[in-house]
Image (cartoon, rainbow, N blue to C red; front, side, top):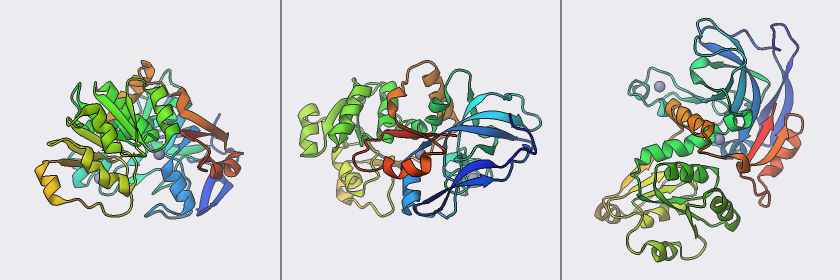
Length: 346
Ligand SMILES: [Zn+2]
Ligand SMILES: [Zn+2]
């Protein structure tokens, strides 16, 4: 039980690329108005964390406490908090918007001009305790801390699908069967779409097929357009999601979109995407980006998890604790690790 004046607490800090260190942090303050003190229980890791670890994350400054996929327990609340109470388990929406910029004023906090993401721009959740705004806590009576930590990565997929505005029965292609592509597939299926999934990794495709038997998997290694056409003829998907963050894939994704269709870039990379304008024009394509997610996405996902319309157990392929994480984490992303999702307990 947390109380003021207790001993120093553990955190894992990334001092510089490749250098994780267990450190003792100052005791947390009591929460102010609109804040909660939370005990972090589970932290999911993803590509963002590994890019930061490898020194490949743009606009990233060190030292930084990573961790933006969080399952937490409320241990103390500031004044005037009616909808939350101590002991509640919550997911944390890690995107701290300014509330004042044009994007925030138009109801688009996920792409706030001054956005600060926990674990990226400000210190995140790889520590025992943290203060977070209560407005960013999403409680559940029944979900586990592991499930709550996975709400954030699911949110990326949920938000992308809401950007795509899918119609029931619509033909959809998802390129990339990593965690984000799996999440996009999940929400596209829930939207009633007929989903094709393409990846160059046979093991990822096999996993996707096992998770989503309703989806049709396509081996993207050889002649992927011909493989897709063999299934759909000339009636190509009207919505194509690229969840690879790979520029070669993102550039070639244009060829899979039907005339009049939408191309949604879920992943991103640091560089330019170019396309042939007459092709873009003749097809009257719409290109969309999808950034982060919203409180609404979080509420939907928690509902889907609570009502068991989404199952996550097989997602969790790697688990460690704060004591063993520094040793194990660098190997999670080795080529042969077959990681889908790794979690760290605190
Ligand atoms: Zn992530
Ligand atoms: Zn803003």
